Image (cartoon, rainbow, N blue to C red; front, top):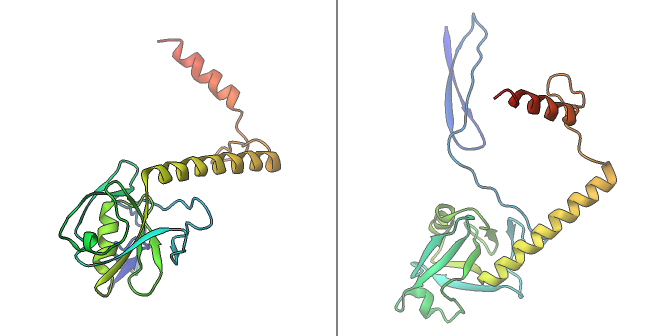
Length: 196
């Protein structure tokens, strides 16, 4: 007798597996698609949070009346504001070139970070928002560059602190789990290419 099981993975892809009770079953699965991850840059840049008073935000009725575009780094910015659209009529400080760093959660007062998630995810977040109004948190290009520089400095400092605490990184052989001498490996490769 054969039975079917549907396996749900965290990326919301479904895979059907046919199991035979007489033979053990093995299967390989691969994820297709590209996944973007939110890198937290500081304590106030959490994935799910409330808007604070220091941030520039706008509460806009749907449809927003803005044209968005994705940059190479996955950040989404405003490229056009319709003069008769809801964004222009809202009275909030919204400018062409602003980067959207957070969008309203599906319901409630919280916002979700959109740093680096891409245009598709931002549009989906706006679309699934329940109700007629969406909150967007905005940042200028200069503020975004400052955030990137600060994040880079923080990463370098964390790397330096980790090396001071734990020492230099060690590369392990995946089979024997013993340290690999990288100098010998580089010399072997160097000698190999001398033949060509």
